[in-house]
Length: 327
Image (cartoon, rainbow, N blue to C red; front, top):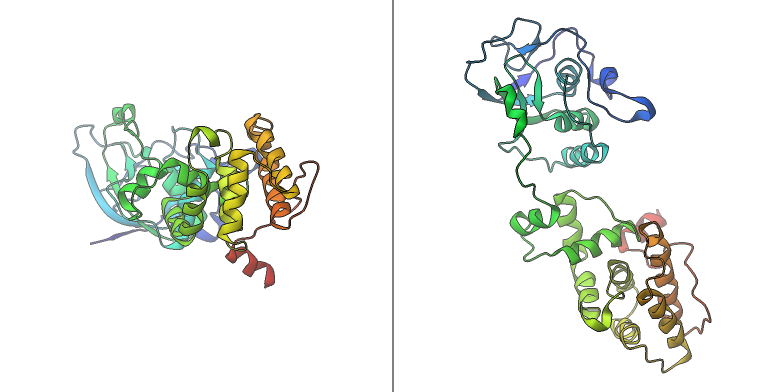
């Protein structure tokens, strides 16, 4: 039986609950909420309802319910029960909310937890995501969890995106290098923050060009400083508009520094730029990506360029990006 978390009459409506006032700080950044009432607890008579009744005995056994949490109920809990918690990660909330809106959110043993006094111990990011997604989400909600469990909640070894894709993505042996190319390919030179489902969907869509780029620039001594996520991402993007033969030639010149034609000289300039460590600060990743793109385009057009230039726009749009531009 799934219980619906019905808000009390004092709660705000979901329409006005996009960001609880008690949990909102300056500049629109989320911060943990502060109590608007005295310490509260889940009522045994109304599962999941925050009330101002007296605290239960600390000896009460923990219990769990499977509940449908509405945005209004999430607001209620964040406003009234989130009295001590860590700083909220805006990026995490947005990732969770995207999964919820896309129908990718799954019911697991993890969820929301309250101590015997009704204080929120775990799940503030999930609750914030429900508010941002503006839709009810099913979760397991634990009540009467020992307060001192805060010493160990979230202390296990977390799974990163590679772990999620390897264990549950059905994509085989995905490694961090492939994932780095994927992120750079979507971020156009900067890292893109993806949920596991988003990463799996995009990797399936662009698996062939990404694996071609990985094969063309494998990790080896001759590609040190060259076989980076930026270079591979540009190769993967260009795969949709250029022949594999020409892209392979570009990578061979990049690896060997052997210039047989005038157009190859610009590629050698790029190689020297990359292996020399120029522009390796994280803030220069976009500039490095833009120079790789412009050099590749000059090579494909057989242009002889005497200096490295940075592209001022995306030169190799993905199929879905090209479709958006034509709308």
